[in-house]
Image 1: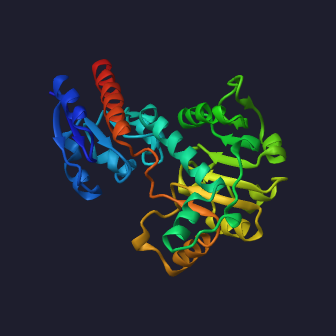
Image 2: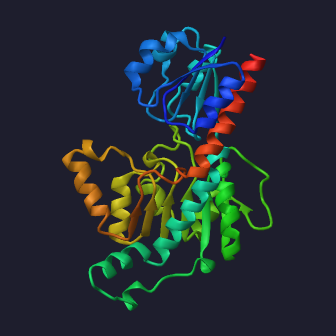
Image 3: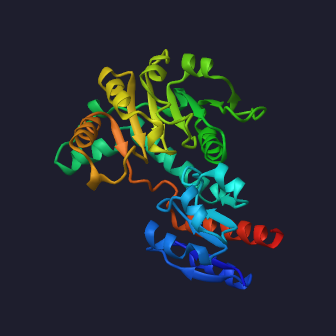
Length: 311
């Protein structure tokens, strides 16, 4: 009998699906890296989210591991090249939370353009300020999507109802233009974009992609939206651009370091300064809906069971 170790909180349907497929389940949502490593040699399958790092040394110890499943989309927590060498299959489940992320991105963007969080805080403090909170209509913007995978497409589908111009660039995809999305290159994006939304994986190519040089290439001042990975944005460059108003506003669901209680003095000072400007930051909850939790469980479990059947 195959055995699966689940190291993160999942919808109970996932456990049921595995059991119905004849897979023995060990559900340990509170396990850390050390605890997982101590028993991983006894399991064929592993389900993780973001806290467990499946690097080469981990896989060397996981002598029976055949399949790793990732709740969500990120691949940065597994050494994909080494997994291929070890004949360990990897599945993620971006289909499960792409709609949740897209809806959250719309909320962040509308909040940014219309000063919604800021004006709400003012009302809570007894201030009724109208003129200084005059907003901008999304219809009159050119929105550039960097990355056109699952979340990029889902975001574009929601954006089209606003009537804005939508540009999209993906280094690894071609031929995806549609009536409401114009496939383009970075040159056109640098020339035309007034809103930039990131839908990219974190890789060596995208780490601190949004840096001083990148920001300076834009002809227009622009709003920046990030619902992908925090480290894609160089936060020092971001702060410089907020100070100069080259970036008119920044809304994000992710940060370079999301463990706020571990911040160095420098990290805390930088975050404090960023928050002085037109910013909205949410705690990595874009894909964290009740509906997405269930969809992630079904999609990932079914992928892993099918893979196990064909292994």
